[in-house]
Structure formats: structure tokens, C-alpha cells
Length: 91
Image (cartoon, rainbow, N blue to C red):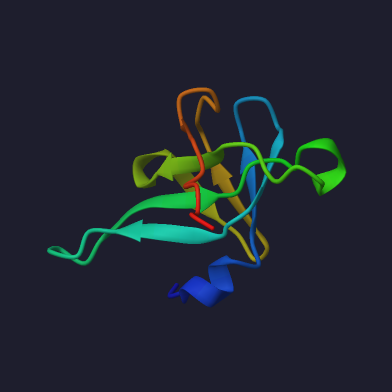
């Protein structure tokens, strides 16, 4: 089964440890030397109705991905260990 990154963005990520919905895939980290996917990136939850931006992103290592479905991706991960602060953009 081959997927493009644009097709992965339509898939929801679900944690099989506790059954929680993490969100939808936003991006992927790719090792430019080997060409392999290193991690999937899911944006964090919105803060206060989305008015104050988003919380930290979830960077899910490729080894934690267990199964791809038609519309979901199952992962086995501890969410506190995969949080990464969002990049601040200069204005």
C-alpha cells in the first residue's frame, strides 16, 4: 500500500494505549540521506477555543506506528513523551 503525504493528511491518528484521538496528520519528518520517514507530526489541541493558538505538537516516531487503515492510523505511544513545542514565528 502506497500513500502520498497529502493522502496521509486526511487520516486521523488514534492511540491504542488509551483509545484517545490525537488528531490529523499535518506533516512528516523525513531523513534526507536515506529517504525514510522518521516521524509523523500531529498539531496539538487548540487553546481556549482556538483564540490563543495551539498547544505543543505531537511528533510520533515511525516505530510507534502500528497500522494504517482507510481513514485512521493506529499508534502505540505515550503522549507526554512525544510532545514538542511549536516553532515560534517572528513577526
